[in-house]
Length: 374
Ligand SMILES: NC(=O)c1ccc[n+]([C@@H]2O[C@H](COP(=O)([O-])OP(=O)(O)OC[C@H]3O[C@@H](n4cnc5c(N)ncnc54)[C@H](OP(=O)(O)O)[C@@H]3O)[C@@H](O)[C@H]2O)c1
Image 1 (tube, rainbow, N blue to C red):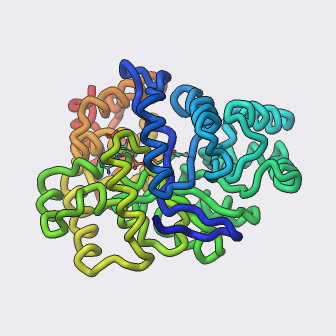
Image 2: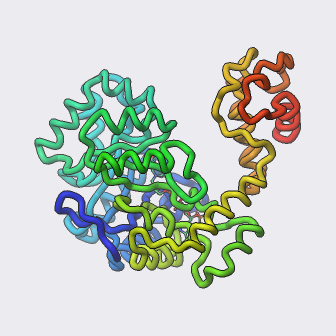
Image 3: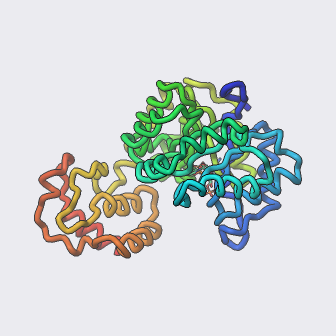
């Protein structure tokens, strides 16, 4: 296992994400504790020392399970424990401490090595700033309850820039994989954090498993890299980036642990070959070609005259084809329609098409997307 040093602490380049443990009866709240313990033990035995959980994972059972696991195996002092403050539950200043105490209890510990403000978008961030989050994190760091403080991010780059520059963070966590280089913080966010000297943790390196099962045309491109598996080729991308402290993966089988550990044990920084870089580029293009409409979600088309969320609708439509996820996209679309405006309400004013930098035929696209998704 390779390690990254952050302020004197050595962190394994692969972190165990505790959001996707094996479960019983397909019930996400019923972690298969026996199987999950085996996976954790194997990973730790192979050098993984960063365990990443959070308050809501597995319907609020992940922290408790990890707490039990660490205690039973006497491992608390041998690993770096990370969890995250569920910022969306903070309504008033006292909630910060209340939630932290509950998490310490869940995890049966008196301190966290890494503590993140969980899943920040700009609205949530500004709200907790107003409620005094910086005083709170200063206090818990000074008292030793938390060693390193960071945040996990889900919003656009501009929001990332505001957040990352607003506090002397010890680290930050972003979603990055070879497909999502321009999504959310993206490579631009990674570059900025690196320039600011803030170590980066990567989540969703396999896009939640989608890159482990690529379509035929991408599989073909991967042939020459065998015996590296699709997952290994995918995880190599973030592992090779300088200043990436650890790459988190939610692993739910021994094979996944073995494959990912193997990569984190051999991949050096800056080690991508020209052929690998070419592969990522071609694979991105192959995925792009599967899209139904070239919407980049720039939102120039917004606001729509009748409030249809155009990029969102196109997002569902594209994802159905990109990852062969028709059923999921249809389900997500149904959910969108509960509060969102249906494309059937389009009055064909054409304002969106005038604004679209990609010159998309939005009116026709909305009709086809709705036809497919409904
Ligand atoms: N802070 C946040 O806001 C936030 C958000 C998302 C995630 N996270 C954290 O980041 C961690 C990592 O994200 P993630 O779980 O989405 O990571 P990921 O590595 O992109 O996805 C994990 C999934 O990929 C598949 N997989 C992993 N290794 C594999 C291998 N070697 N071969 C084949 N398939 C493999 C498995 O899918 P199958 O289940 O299909 O087998 C697994 O469930 C999470 O577990 C969580 O701790 C944090």
